[in-house]
Length: 115
Image (cartoon, rainbow, N blue to C red; front, side, top):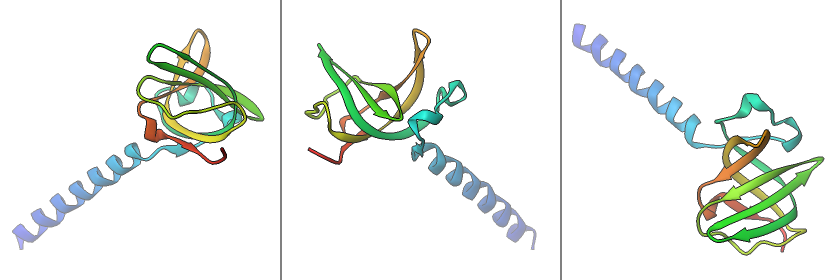
């Protein structure tokens, strides 16, 4: 009987760890207008229309807007993007020069809905 309780207790602990891990891996959908300093460090997903795209060496910078705009920074390979496309981006909210931005870690975290 004691072994059953130990196994049950360990199973609950493992299940709790798995739930916490799953929450940390999936981005939280957010509206750009709702992002604030309290979101810094969070893994989020935002959607909007590209208003600006520029490239500098191995960096891609873009702004996406939906009522409000936010800068998106991508440090790795990136898809071909252009102004006017509707996209979603998943990344970590950071603050740079007093403004919020989203840092995307890989190309697959950018989804293009319109070409």
